[in-house]
Length: 123
Image 1 (cartoon, rainbow, N blue to C red):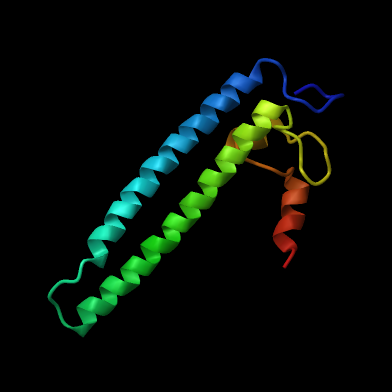
Image 2: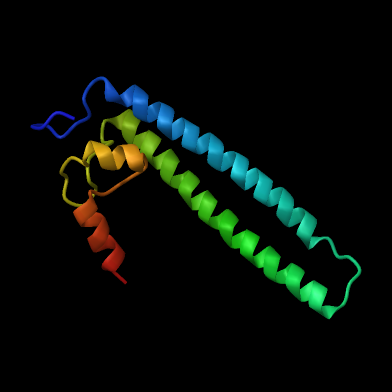
């Protein structure tokens, strides 16, 4: 990143585009597998009340996981949009550059670490 403008160094957009596309592909595979698992779990089958309750609980868990994966997929899509518009790597809260190690660890990061902590404390 260049220090003065807070924008990504010219060499880095390709690295982050690749990382984000890989994350998107991985999430799509996970969501698809989860949806298939959910479809199999929802098929009524023989069993006692305990079996049906366990299946319902498992379905609810898989559903929550799928929702989380879909939110992560939305975050990746938004990061790709920011990358295309030149806003990638800039904290949405304070406007400062997000440190490169944070972006490499979390390519879809929207906030610097300080602002992320503040966001997590908000109700």
